[in-house]
Image (cartoon, rainbow, N blue to C red; front, side):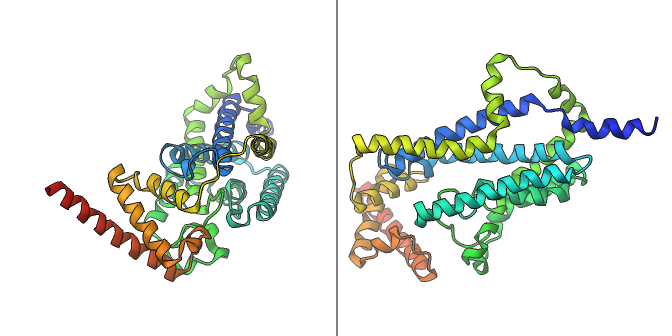
Length: 332
């Protein structure tokens, strides 16, 4: 009797929960829609900064959070009772290899925004680190998740500004990259997934999910969800290739750097201020930066401490100037 019990326990994680594949498939389609919009922006068919602010930024973070949450869930379901090292290392090698390949390709294609630590890099590292949390109580895992998520809000170190340390996510600057998913705070989403999976297993929710059998409508989502890495690697080259082909027939209107600056500044500013204020503020910033001949440094993403400090001073000066103008206008 005692021989059969462990055997049944070890085989339990092998039962695939279709609902997780469906959710992962939905997340992949959402990611493809975001990337398609990013491609349109990259080729100039939308205003610059469209996907970096507002609703699109929230949309992107929700997608990334969902993926990493599911990484934590899957990690616990597959290895929570017993780590299956052969399967783990095989999956890790595939993800890590794909991450390295993406870094190499984007370094060649888009050197000023190449992906040095994106979602696949995060998944690979988080899978390794997550093993240390598989045996911990669910509550402790969720507390650790909260601390990891909150860390970038309270902890920023100039000592971590070196490019080799940007993967940590606690540097004083925000590096430019087309996909930046550092350890902090994103590892927190993986820990949340591990913690929730533990609670679901203990409460019987996992067993109920395993018994769900979605209809035929879910087959495409299940297929995508079960081949998530292949979908991730294929969809963006396909989408960007289609947009590139379209651009050869109907190229987008080319805007000057000044116009692009004003549009990006306006969109960023309007996250916290009204349009009238932002129009005056952005005009002040552009006039000052152009007068100094610093526009090229800005577009080249100069991250030196003196230039960042200078931009901060300019922003403060233009903010004060704009507020004074609006106050004077309001009293007339």
